[in-house]
Length: 133
Image (cartoon, rainbow, N blue to C red; front, side, top):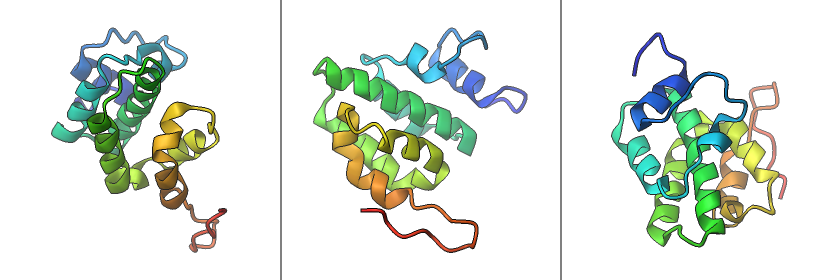
């Protein structure tokens, strides 16, 4: 990925998306339920920075939500997303916190256990906060 590009521009270029820099909600505007497995494969097969992983995971979760709404998201795809979240959740705690609050979304039903266990954050003291369940 190019060092001069923003993480969104880098990921968009990698995926062939027509990013202009004027998009307000990048992940929503470029979410594609037909490409969610491609996005997951891109996450797994590329050497991405932490920021690029963050924006790509945001796109993956939004695309998976749309795919679930259309009933076209495979179990393999969900399992792949869960595997990534288990491995890399530390790269995007804010993103996971945001999705945790969306309990009416379909994707959250498939990943909720990971959202609660992986997004415990430090409370400024260096110690992790207690799980809120």
